[in-house]
Image 1 (cartoon, one colour):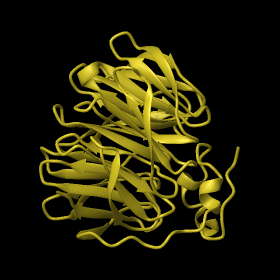
Image 2 (cartoon, one colour):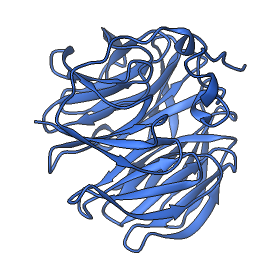
Image 3 (cartoon, rainbow, N blue to C red):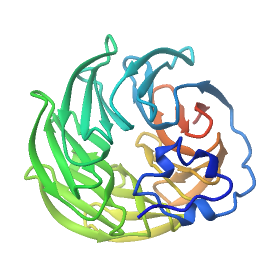
Image 4 (tube, one colour):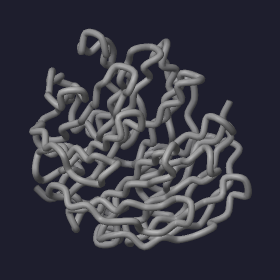
Length: 330
């Protein structure tokens, strides 16, 4: 199923795999853009071609922009400059960081692999073969496991990060795209984009224990275990579904901007950050009250987001600008 591109994005369809991947809906590209939101205190950093996923290592003072052109830009978060560029695989999408081991894990969609990076010297350690078209990845640093959403296999690959071997494969719903891990309750949450569901995985047994209906075309997902809630960005619906982690039931639906794409959660301040890719904004949600408490203007086609809670910074990958917006947050 191939998405239709609007006039606004037609010149970017070939360049940006974010607009041509099978998981992207057509309605998002046909919607008219909304007026720009007020600008927060921010700086923009030029990175590689078509940045999508973002990750942060709070101990190394680094942020990582995964660029679909085949690289990862390493950003010094103290100087807001690109300190290095790492070559990875073909069409890399997202990255997860294990700050305990100084390792990064990057999904390469067209290679069906995960690149393992040494973040101390920004070198490639090894490459792991996973399922078909891996998009997102999340880690449990305490059990040394990584969970990879394979979009065209309808599976999740489980990697032992001590041995860099796939140790299990879990069947989930149609076109899994997003994944988040909650060590606090031993669960992984996977969005199944074409099934409009969320798979709940017990990470002790690697079994799906619940499938939760959510909104239309769910993509990004994040967890705030402090309030026992999962937040699912429904791209076509323009909403965020809130799921109770105890009952695995939907408890609320939050309207946000056009085409919410990713989710980053600051569990210290109980805030969720949702980039709205066709609004050029980020919605800020209070995870206690489910209220949108702010809307931040960013760059063109924000696709990925990560938060550094130690220094109070938000990092947003603007896919069509080849930039990362750095935003000061409370």
